[in-house]
Image (cartoon, rainbow, N blue to C red; front, side, top):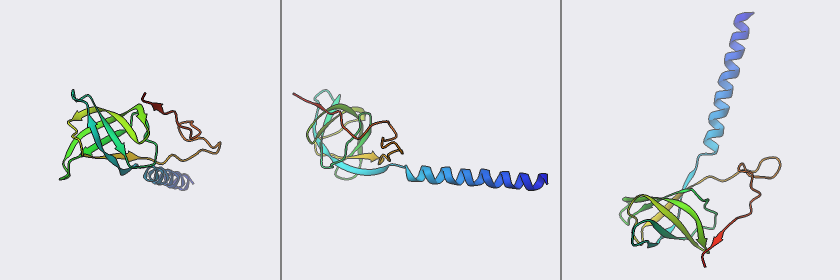
Length: 131
């Protein structure tokens, strides 16, 4: 009887691990091109990205830039400041150059049963506008 219970428990644990791995695969981010570097601060502190995508890029998201030959040139962190198709990002490492391609990790947010995203947002955007 104990062996039967132990096997059943092992099967349940294996099924739970498999389910967790499947869920993790479902929420892995996609690397999507989002635009190009439009301007770089003369001090190298931030860059202005001209976005060609129509999805919201969240504050704190990571952007990686690549030169024309595919070499990674910098890692940027999205700041809350943006205007229209332009996104501002702080330079975390490297040196972005005007014209570099920008790629970001995109994780589609799936609503919970109450209609809110996993972050508790209803889908509205709090976008700051540069004046």
